[in-house]
Length: 391
Image (cartoon, rainbow, N blue to C red; front, side):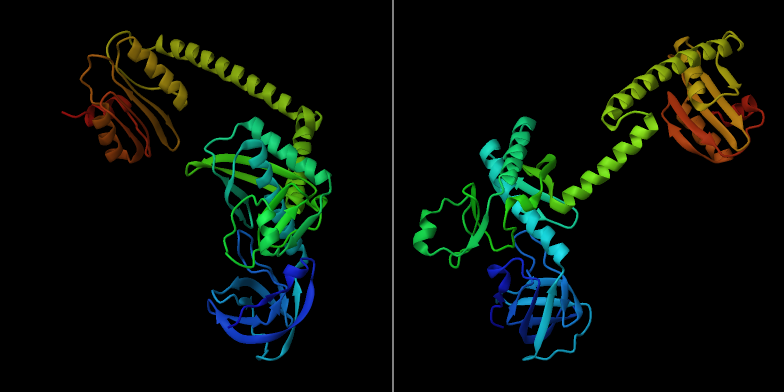
């Protein structure tokens, strides 16, 4: 098949067009059409393919073949034959976002190079994330912020975005941000005088159409840095969602949205203080319970307590040089703590295995310490421990 003439190169804003069907085929088991000319952009250069309708049938994917022909993958057979004229219509909301995020990527790539000395290696403009991989292992937050600020200043400047095929003489005079991936028919996208890049994608006509660019994350990736960003409608959607969450939190804390971080910090500090107080009270309660236990030797006891209190009691007994073989029974079984004091020969792990084999349960441990929960009633706990203790 011959290469498809790309109408989007002449006009990225073209939404509706007519073209002659070159071939009726299939792609990945689905009906597909190849046109002599198309305004549908095929997936390439990190940009997703266009959706829309062709002959009244939904276009669910757009791909380019090695021949340069563009395949329109359809949801159903449109009933068109080679030589027929088909009407295509672009999903404009999708295309407009793709244009904005692709232009935003060029703008941010230029800004990362200018402010962070971080040349772009690749970019992916996906359905859920927009990423730029740059050839620098780690970029300081201050340089990322400077790159973001520069990109947004250029958006505010409402720079013109131009795409064209310069001749060899003109191309030689242009300082491209990166080398072209093709040797002929090199298309250049210029953002004012700030950035010149070889690119076959669709783009906005002015930087102001981006509204804003926001870096949302940066992480090390294969010896480089992967920068995640957002722009245009996607950026607004994220901003509005975050604003909704922040306002809801403000209502919960009875404060202004901007005061939510301080309210959360206070809540965190209050929580830490409360946990410290609970720990202290648990220790005092453990001391009080220990005072009621026999004064010497191993402690084998069923104690009404939760698992944390049981551990606290066990820890204090071991510190005092006493084995702690404890359980906390309830209606559905029992929490068990088996702690061995220094110099003791009790094998807590082996004892737990015997108990679990007898009553069922989940847990485990080592010779000096084991924990778990038994699934059945323990009855007479000291007798049960004695019957399960390894010989």
